[in-house]
Length: 218
Image (tube, rainbow, N blue to C red; front, side, top):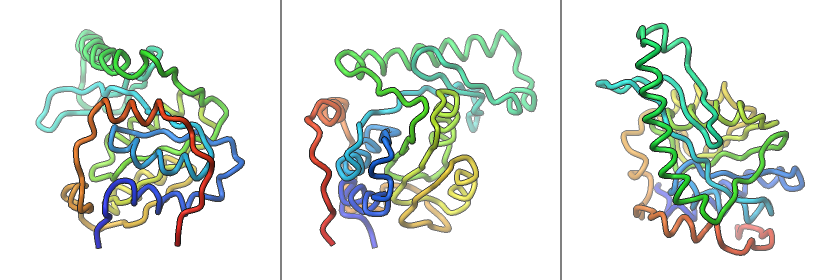
C-alpha cells in the first residue's frame, strides 16, 4: 500500500504526534518535499513551521564521504571519525567547508529573504521528511539540531529503510515511522503522486497563515 501523496503522509504522521500538542514544539521540514509533510503536522500540533537549511561537507567519492555539515548562522559540525579515517588534510577541509557554505548561502538567499528562522534552542523539534532511504541527510540535520541546542528531537518520516531507521533512532529522543521497510530503493516508490516541490511552492507554505489545530478525519 502506498501513500496518496505527501499531504496524506503528513496527516497520518500528525495523528501519531498529537501527544506533542502543548509542548511548544517546532516543526521543521528537512527538504522541500519534507516541508509538505511538516506543514500537515504543524497544523495539527498548532506549532510553528520552518525549513531546516543545511549543506553537507563531503569529499568526492564514489561514493561521496560525509565529513560534516554547515548550518545557518555559520555553524559547522564535523565528523571527526570520518576525517581521521579518510585522512583529510586541513587545507582540504577548509576548501570543502567553503564550498558547502556557498551552497548554503544560495539556500539562505532564497528562503530567508522574508522568513526568519524559528528559534529552536531549548524546544522540542519535530524533524519531518517524506522518507529516509539512506538516512544521510537526516543524520546531518540531527547533528546540526543538537549543536543548535534543541531540547528534544523527534524524527517523523512516513517510510524508511529499517536498518537506516534503527541507526537514526539511536540519535534522536523519539522517532515515528509509519512504514519501516526491509529494503527501500527510492522514497518515491512509496507514493502514488510524488511531484517535485519547487522553491516557490515551499515558500508559499512558509508564508501561509497558520491554521487552527485540526483533528485528522479517521
